[in-house]
Image 1 (tube, helix red, strand yellow):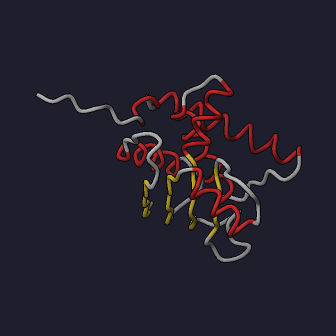
Image 2 (cartoon, helix red, strand yellow; image 1 turned 90 degrees about the vertical axis):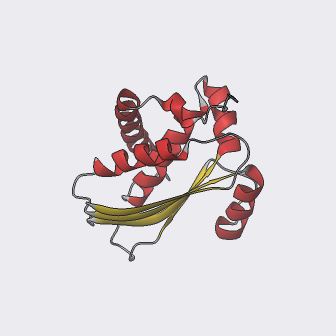
Image 3 (tube, one colour; image 1 turned 30 degrees about the vertical axis):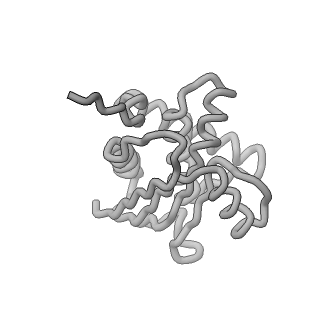
Length: 162
């Protein structure tokens, strides 16, 4: 498998251990049956930037947790051996949802990465039935990653001066 994974961190809400996020995302991509190559941009942003993107591209007001842009050829994403896209993730929303759902923000961040990749693979959440199907797959993949990775290590620890 060949791939390009670019991670951009433009938020200041939490300190991210980007090498750990890269390992986690690559592991997830390698699990996708039939995927031979990918070009994926993960953009970690704050609420203000996410609200701007949401308004500009989707004509929706306010921030949201994740927005995915599929850069594949039209009609290709669901069965193709390649994946091309960008995922914008709002860490402010991840923190708020973690508090609301009684989990850690690192788990929410991981869920958003999974959610975006599933969209790029053709999953949709516009109807209740499709949303349930997508959520089941999200939960399955999150469990697998949680079994292999200590998600708490997505938080960069403070350096202690020696």
